[in-house]
Length: 457
Image (cartoon, rainbow, N blue to C red):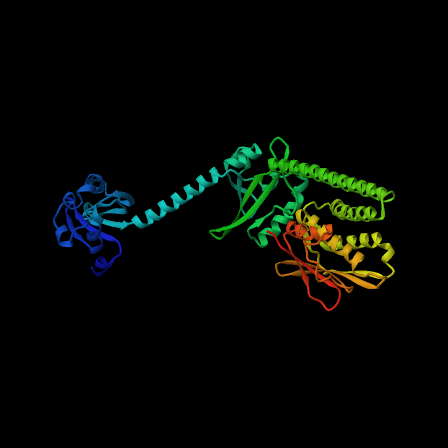
């Protein structure tokens, strides 16, 4: 009786009139009625909602002597607020001395929790299937032997096979034949150390449709461990359209690059023509006009040099300042060749390149050109010797360009933008166009100009 009382299953003894003789606490809890209330009462009184189902079964057991084992039942009792429950019920006949059924031993197990877990698992599996089927890309699950165990509708559309034609086949049959042999080794290597992997970017991948046609794909691999078995979920995406769009964009970019290349080349050539015309004009002009034409020619060359660098480097957005200043210094040395034996021109720059966008590079180049030419013309009168130094250096928020000389320095009555000479009148305007700041720095000898150029996002 102690075992009867403490058993984790609901146990009850029912007589041949279907009255309860005895129940344990577990069955009393299942039925929602006290133990004492069960004794001597018909099953219809204790579990009226289930009697119509259970009574015919009990009568059959009494009539035939055959038992029902773990019969699934569903419904509700007075317990648990009338909510639906699930049980496994075993009804075995109790025999008298003559071997005839004289009662029934009822054993009931509440499996509601397991049933809910199973429903949850089934619901989860159903949601997984729905997600897999609704995915726009092709999805294929492969077991540890490389055999397809699951495919979705997207894969059917992509390859032209029905899923029955793919399930059970090795994944390699979806590849062009030339790739199949090598893929076996790569698949074995992946399964030895599985990890989520995007196969795009390593090399171009191709798949093979049922009709034999090939198309480019991108594949993502995700290992899944379930029930001590390894599966791999492969996401397959047809990138035919993307490849075509990319090729179209690359072609358009090449055409645009060729056009820009031609534009800068022609602008450079046209500026050189203007420079040559100015040079011809100087041959028949007065000394004063010849000097003015020569200065204009230097400005044209400074602009043409920018287009020359853009043409050479195929970069139409940025100008490398260090290289530009080197070429500009060389042009100035050629322009003032008669001064080269007594005036030296040096340039200093950092090891790493500093670039400036095209919109600001032109006014910056013209500004530096004015400072260098002014130094050549005015810093060393009376055949004096000296040095002009151009320095490019980075700073926290941009870069600095300095133009220094060790000549006679600026007269005290000359200020930027206020003198009558065109060069000094241009300096503030060019500084503003370059989005920079130009200052005259104090120095013991000569003149020191500092141009700061901030980064512009």
